Image 1 (cartoon, rainbow, N blue to C red):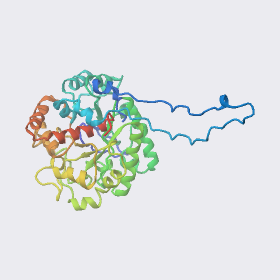
Image 2 (image 1 turned 60 degrees about the horizontal axis):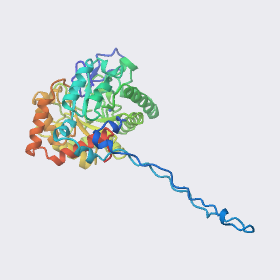
Image 3 (image 1 turned 135 degrees about the vertical axis):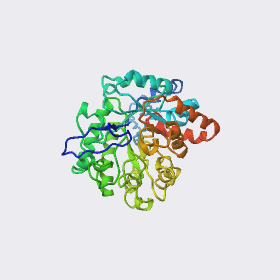
Image 4 (image 1 turned 135 degrees about the horizontal axis):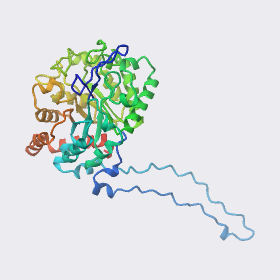
Length: 420
C-alpha cells in the first residue's frame, strides 16, 4: 500500500498517540476456486468420492432351523481416507499457459482503485498475475467491483494491498483502523492473531486476497521513521512471536500474507522510497534482523506465505545493486533459509532506490533474472513494454525457460490454484 508521500512498497509508520499523518497506501487466501482457472484443463478435473461397499454379511438364509446364527467376523473400521485434492498440478497448469502468459503471471502491477473499469481492462489486456491497490480511493473495494476484475483474466489474479496497521493500512476508511505493529505488541499474541484474522476476513470480503504484511523488521527506530512503529520490536524473539501471530490470523481468514522486508530494513540508514540506503553487514543481520525469517520459515507452509525483498545495500551481500536486484540475496533466502515459496520484490516503479537508475522494464527484468518470482510495481502504466522486454529475455535464454516455469508454479501455488 502506499501513503501519499511514499511510493508503494513500504509505508511509513505513525505514532498512535498523535494525529495520523496522511496514510501511505501501497501495494492476498483463499484464492478463488480452481474452477475459474484455465477452462480446458480444469473442466476435466473431478473428485472421485464414494462410500466403501457394505461388506457385512448375513448367513441367516443359509441356516438350518436348529443352527445358531452365524456371526460375521468382527472387522476393524476402515481408516478414513483423505479426499483427493481436486486442484490440478502446478506443472500441468503452467504448461497450459503460453510463454507470454507465464511471464505475465510474474508481474504485479498498480491499478487505480477509483477506476474499476480501467483495472479490469489492464487485467484483460495483459493477463498479469496480480494487481496492487494503492492510494486512498475505495471504489474497487466496494460493491463487489473486484469480481469484474477477476472475470477479466484467464486466471484468477492476486489482489494485493499493504495493510499492516498504523500508518500503513488500506481499508481503515471502510472497516475501521488497525493498530500499528508496535502498539499491537502491547497486546498478547493471541489477541494479535484474532485481530489479524478479523482483518483478513474484512479484506477477503472486499476481494483482497494478498496482504503484503506482516512487517518482520527488527527495529528500535523512532515511531515516525521509515520502519519505526511498523516493527513489533527490536527483540527478534518478540518480532517472531507477534509477526507469526499476525500471519497465522491472516492465513486462518484465507488471506495470503507476505513477510517483509528481507533481509532486514529495521536498522537502515534511511528510506528506500527516497534513494539508496544501507543496513548493517550480513553477519550482523544474521544475529538479529534475519532471525525472524529463520524461525518463521522453518515452521510455515511455504505455499501459504510469501517473502518480500527490500531495496537495501548490504555489506557482505550486495555490491553495485540493491538487494532486490542481487542474485546473492535470493540464494541466501532459498539456500540458507530453505524457502521454496513465492518471493516478490518491493515496489520497483515508485521507490527511488531503484527508479532513480532503472526504467520499470529494466528493473523488472533485472529482478527476475536475479531470482525474484514476482516483480511488483505500484505504477499505473502500460504493461506491454515490460512484457515485451521479458519476452525478449525469455526467447534469448537470458531468462531460462525452466527457471521461469518454476517461478510461475510457485506463484500459482501461492494463489491456491494448484498443488505442487
